Length: 124
Image (tube, rainbow, N blue to C red; front, side, top):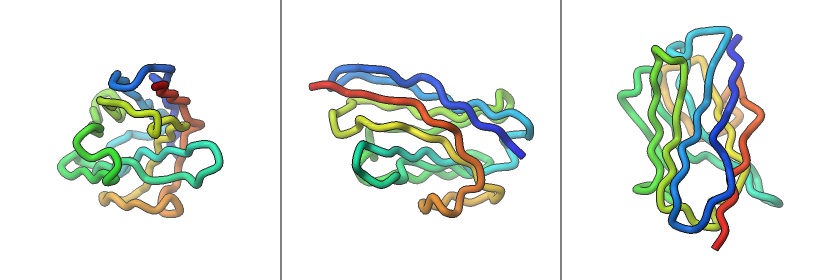
């Protein structure tokens, strides 16, 4: 079983950048396809980005495409989410999640392991 811990959240202004990290322990991160999700107040948790086990394929929600980049360093057991050109509507708690499959999917029910989240707040 893998444990996931997110970090890197904070309070920024519109147009700023943040890089989130998700550190894995317990098992090698290379065993899992990984995803980032987010949940804003009063809204359901939604898919943001995903990456295959090898890192060879990525997938993004339309709302972040071109602004966010997911990447992974399996040697460091860490997944990243680089967020540029942040907007107030990006304000949410961001979660990383892992699934024991090579493939990226967008439904949260298909992910087996979750971190506790990190808050991102973007002010105008």
